[in-house]
Amino acid sequence: MTSSELPTIGIAVIGFGWMGQAHSRSYARIPSLFPDRNAEPALIICCDNVEARGVEAVRSFGFRESTTDPAVAINHPDVDAVIVCAPNMLHEELSVMAAKAGKAVFCEKPVGGTPDQTARAEQAARAAGVITGVGYNYRWAPLVQYAKSLIDAGVLGDITNYRGRFFSMYGSDPMGLLSWRFEHDGAGYGVSSDILSHSIDLAMMLNGPIESVVGLQDTVIKERPLPKPGEGTHYDRGEPGDPTGPVTNEDYAGCFARFANGSVGTFEASRAIVGPQSQMAFEIYGTKGSLMWNLETMNEMRIFLTEAHDPGDGSAVIHDGYTTVYAGDRYPFHGRFVPGDANAIGYEDLKVIECAQFLEAVASGEQHDPGFAEAIDYVSVQAALVRSWESGGWEPVTSVRID
Image 1 (tube, rainbow, N blue to C red):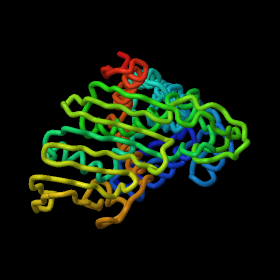
Image 2: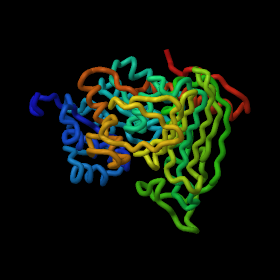
Image 3: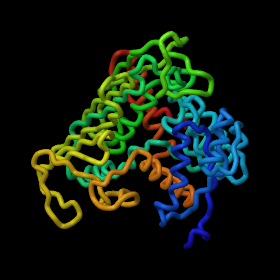
């Protein structure tokens, strides 16, 4: 089928900060990177509460039009899929509006600022029967996909231990602006929604469901400079003497966890730590081997194997002692971007993979994974973690799904 014969999926992006821009660039890149696609993406309309951003979306990103009214974008007759990149506490309202309009909806994680909001958004999408997606983009890293295949094939044996962390310095500067991410009214919970969600989602993808947790939280920096309305992100900074406001959600969250497969795990997330800059990392240990991966070096993975393993070329490989494996075109998706071995791809390439998979789901009518059901899986763990902050003890993970 030629590109002119492919169906067109009209895209609306709501929220044109850096994440909305990343999605927009990614949809524009799909045709050149996925010649085997089953649909053509079309950037129809961008919505942002800052009018100038919408103007820029049309001028520089290729959108046909822009608006400051989400309802206009969602109900546009040429829109088939709505991409929600607005602050967390707006996720529920926008996702529900899109679902009720019969549009496929992709929402950045965690689909709401609180578990209850995620549950209501998922219920609305399920009732409407629309395709959903959620932005757990680290799942799509080629070496993470390879790790998943090794674990599923039993190459690591029975999994015994899991260590996950997401350490980021984006909130380590006390002069960093009080963006919506640091306020409960804008983000809901703090790092447990923002970055711990990535770590635990990836753990459940690789190692299965979590049954119980015990944990704690802390707010390290209590006050931050106020941003000017419509300006500044969590990467921008103020100056000494600027007016400040209180930080109203957590900078740090950590927990112990018990998995349904009998393994145990630890998780930590901090936005106020100094040193690790974007250390979204996992270590997974089994009875026959182990794996280590870190976003900061996302094109490398450390592997230890005690038994021979055929990597797919007919050879027998034993990694007796940790071996560094470099990403390359023999791993999923990598060859879409660059050929050969050890030629690196980057963060936004993962968003392109994510967007291409969601586009295919919408075109085929088959539910995307991860979707809102997987968002429920994480926030059910988060709800148990929040209860543990209050009780000080182990809490069971029970689904927050609304039947």
